[in-house]
Image 1 (tube, rainbow, N blue to C red):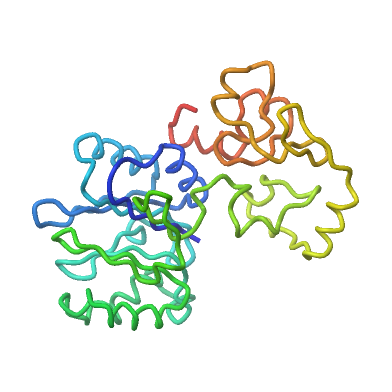
Image 2 (cartoon, one colour):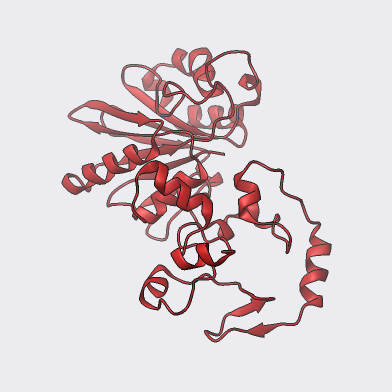
Length: 289
């Protein structure tokens, strides 16, 4: 899946970065322009990139920053395959999606790196940042999304309309994997009474429930309301408890994970307010939840 993020100004919330990292754990990177040069930082430890970004934003809140969190599909989990990539001495880019013609090759290079070597590296910088070239690349890559950054700070999004802007038009996201898990559109269809987030995290194939079947199940269940006024499906409130509520009212165990928004199961998860994958991720990354 991966996610590419354009942060035009200001600082992204730490929770947004953490959710993007949990959903895309195979390495991260960021880039920006400074004094006419491209600055790129990437690591297999996502938290190192997050910390570097937050530190940078304390001193510079107006320079556009492009971030990327990766899920490995081709080429293996290596620092070289982490985004961003140089296209030439003046341009770098990040990619979200799969380039089918360059995927599945028996090589240590990712599909993005192969596409750069074969196509993008042959395009002069002056031609790359044009409307017609953006359209041509967009047609060639299908549903994938690219963000290019030039050494003078000028950026260009290819297939911009396949992603989403926030309300203030300050941040663009190539997909919604930065949101709580329950709000991510690509996983909504996987919900059922017998399927939990832990199964998805372990790499098991989630069951796809036909829309008609899921509707009939929801109609057969009695609808009620929780004390907060939120609708309840069985014993689980549909709306997650906020982090502030979970921390301030310890007598009420949170129903959903504060970080990813998944349902919590068992006393241990409910007491700490985080599901097992998010808690384990925090231990590995050295983050104090």
